[in-house]
Structures are given as C-alpha cells and as structure tokens.
Image 1 (cartoon, helix red, strand yellow):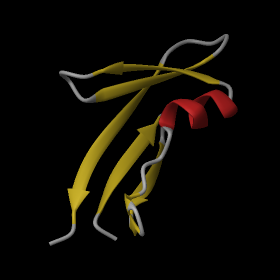
Image 2 (cartoon, rainbow, N blue to C red):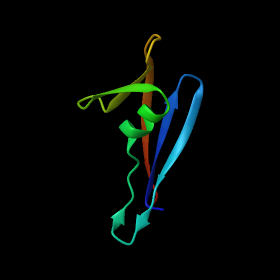
Image 3 (cartoon, rainbow, N blue to C red):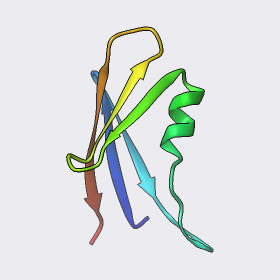
Image 4 (cartoon, rainbow, N blue to C red):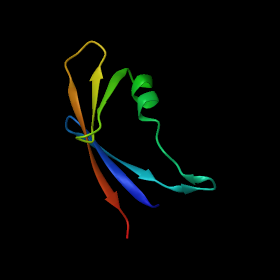
Length: 70
C-alpha cells in the first residue's frame, strides 16, 4: 500500500487504499462508483472536494483526507 484517501459522506467515513499493481497505482473510478450507487458526482478541483448527491435529494458533501505511508 502506498497511500490512502479517507472519504466521508454524512456520518460515514471510508478509507480507500491506493495499492501498487503490476502496471502502477490502482485508482478507484469515483464517478462510475457514485453512478452505480445512485449518486451524481461533481468535483471542485481548487478545493480538492468532490460532492456526491443522491439523484432526487439534497446535496451531501463528500470530503477527502489524503494520507501517505512513509
């Protein structure tokens, strides 16, 4: 494992680990994952914040906390 990202949505937090594969780091396709779970995704690059919102409900902020193993 090279690094991780803590993803928080509401009161839930998930840690997504970035691991090295044969061809490099494995990335999680967040937009495809969000869509599969019934969420719309937008991204604010300068603030490094993604916003997930259920298709027919109010917005729910999604925050990232980057970690790196030394």
